Image (cartoon, rainbow, N blue to C red; front, side, top):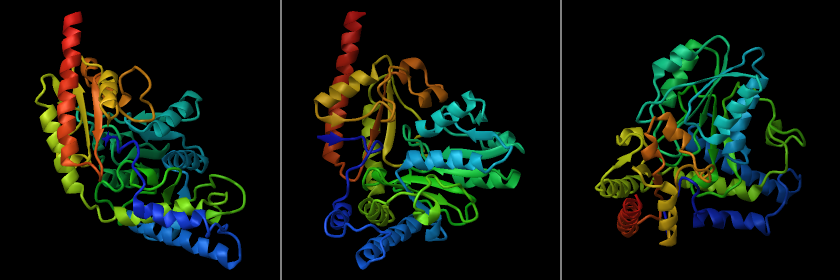
Length: 384
């Protein structure tokens, strides 16, 4: 198996799994119990909170609240902000956000509950900060944008965007960092970011656990009501084993080990595939403008799903876009927003590399992709 779909999910690191296992067996106590077993679980949770705070560069571990993942963190940020914003009902976002932001904003807009401004992206997937500045109004409650796009890897300048928002409004600034943390240097220190969401399974932690950074002074209403866990901000018995796993994954991710090598392998793959005629990279190729593990390549007049399935038969796993909405037959909304021509957009493949990707894997995939694409194009020509 050659797995090049790390943006969809990553395997659990062995060190992470080893740390989790005791809390699935002998250390199973509820962290809210007053006895010593419960307090050991509570201490492990607080250690994990400190690790996540350190990974993000938060000023205090009390600004970290554990969630079930990116979807909950993003939904809570948007709905929670609207709940405390009084008459303000304007959201600014982008047309290339993950579905858990894009669809929520569209649903709220369709129900007449908010107005939404979506910043344009150019052909390389970049936003214009002047457009952001011009879009802010006294009615703007929230600005929400991702740190790195899950389909193209393009990085948004969220630190500068947050500064612009705070200098020109009192809107809350939210960042979806799910597909960025662990893939690039980043710190909240000195920033004006109010809310930031992460998910453990994107950086070698377990699925079903994430965290939301809530800057001190930002008063989101609780996401769930109940026993008062997470300092009253998110009720429910906490999954100690998952939180411990997130904490260890966060510790490992702080080193950013291997990213230069990953970028070299990505570039090797990309450059070789671009030797095929009528191919292009979707997004920027500037190393400073994208995460090091991702390339999104289009093959004109070739069906991306057919490429993906042919590679699957050969034991190589890739994606036609976000894993959350790849079953439809329409072009990716991200590529549409970037105005990628339909003949290219329908033939797009996302290759996302990870820690376990080898040079041998890349050489094999290069050979497979060239053979598959040439075969599909040959069949299309014969059938024309």
